[in-house]
Image (tube, rainbow, N blue to C red):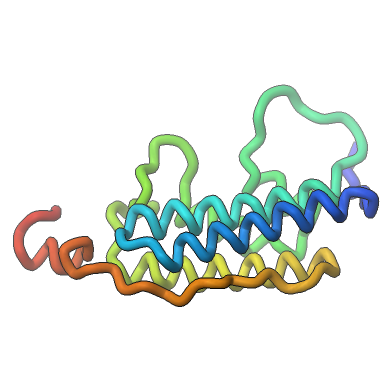
Length: 160
């Protein structure tokens, strides 16, 4: 039996709350003064946005037992978000990953800033997919001090 997404429009308020919280997480990531904090804020934001989709769209039919990775479930209920799910599953791996570390190890300021922009794009796209208003990010990007930048740490011989 093939699982088919089922829409639950009565859950749009809950999805809007999750997207609002995602916007707050993005604002926090903008104000973060370390790579780890910016990465963690972005991770929370994109997970909240994915949860908003899962709140409104559900799978009909039998379900497996136990927890399921959100990035594996998202394409099943929102095929149009498959590339995003694959991307975040790769760059923000679950289990054992420390904030500020991507799939290939510690992130630089540039990498985490790029990740933040991609997180903003994902949250905006999710809002559109669900037919909800765009999420507001109410903070300007704060520069991360050079002492927290992976590239700077490598030049000083403090990172591998």
